Image (cartoon, rainbow, N blue to C red):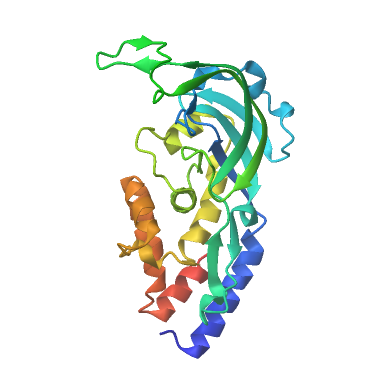
Length: 268
């Protein structure tokens, strides 16, 4: 238990840091429609028309660029930190005055397509149009994206963010979205940087350092996930580096040396 005096000092310190960082722009690479089945429909990476990659066609001020990738369209967004995080406000906890919580982990995409095909892949890898097999996926062709909306968890389980040079923010938004898709290989931070070579992603580092030393609301289960908690499935589905970052963040809930924690906050 943190002493009352340090509660006040640390709460005030984090509040001051939040005022400093909450409006900082985070450079996010978002994959809103990845090649995973949504119900029985798959949007393949090459199914999107050229106008999808003209960000002016989208009514989203925060979207500044786009690029085709093996995981479908990637969008570069400049998001204020307070669109992704907020100060926790839960009266059940007397110590949550300095906790942050994750608000968004994905974009939900409003999409359309002009045609779809029902394709079947047999055991030998042969592809055929077998309409008798009702369990096969439908594949969209000539697809379009009309709108992107920030959300906690998208209806497309493959939708996700990557925040290059910000591993702690990335791990938190991944957990928020729920990375429970095993058939999709997610792009790495380095790959995302190569997609947008003119962007200085090092500007994410200062904000990531701030998040790294904060306590995160309801993140303590990431040290010892509860077997009965739905978060366990999401936690185990993350890659090893995400899990490492979340365990490190979870340790902020076990404060053994108050002075050491305050020293970390004062270093920002």
